[in-house]
Image (tube, rainbow, N blue to C red; front, side, top):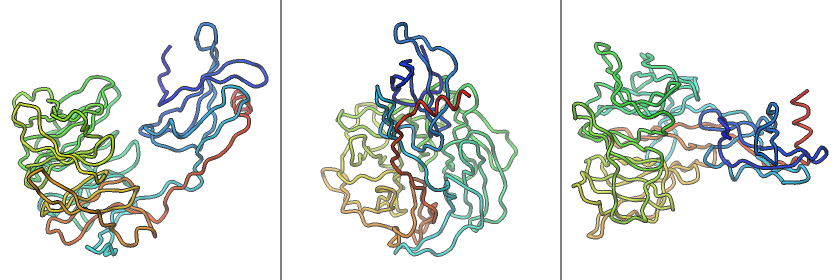
Length: 379
């Protein structure tokens, strides 16, 4: 039996009055879930019976934390889950100085979930919307906005020369890496088509423009962009098997290092380019998600529990080391930068990040009898 919309742990619970067994599982919508589904099932054969009922709408949580977000008692009908108690925030790009003080915002009122500054610092690319959205390019002050692509799009990145962008398109069948020329003389080109169902994220483009970093599932790969035809991505093999890059990775400004959070916490620095043998990676205890370098290459910044922080980098004989991170901005508790892209201006004088003054709040909620919701949904 396969549950197409299941996104995480499937719970097996008995109706407290009828005794009928149900499968309870989160319903996925893009990268988040918003409801649980109660599907009647035969305890003897495991076959589903009848139509599923949606319940507990208004829930919130990333798919990868679903197991921590709800619990159903096998008997008795009780449940504990997280409930959204405020509206979904609108994220906007705001410039901050080195001390974390807001300077100015970019003139747009639309919701967005990603940003990237062009290599010359003159243009800004924004990923707008939520699961369905569009990629817009504009001048760095927000003027002259134009839409380049629309649909289910992920991870837009500039090419090293600023003449095109790369992004992941997610049509109905399978994800694809797309190259999009900015002058419009060449139609968008599919660089590589991935297998149906394969989870792919574009982590970054090397400073020289020859390599794309991709996560295929949870494993980091390198894709040569200067090959013709483009060959399959090569997995990065590390000598130290205990160091596992996780979710995000970025090239240093000089292209000599790849920095990535580790699945077990901390950071890993991988020397680049690889030589064909397993790479010696260097671990650091400081953990920063959504990492990005200062243009000087002497600081690594990222998020700690949703608050932006930067750590000075010391290059030693034993590899890079991160000093104690410093929180940026100083007013972080007055608003939140969330788990979104941030980037230094090319001259290193200020930082652009997506911020909101409407942080989303969720509360743990106890439901004594989920079966009532299932019955109401069926009626």
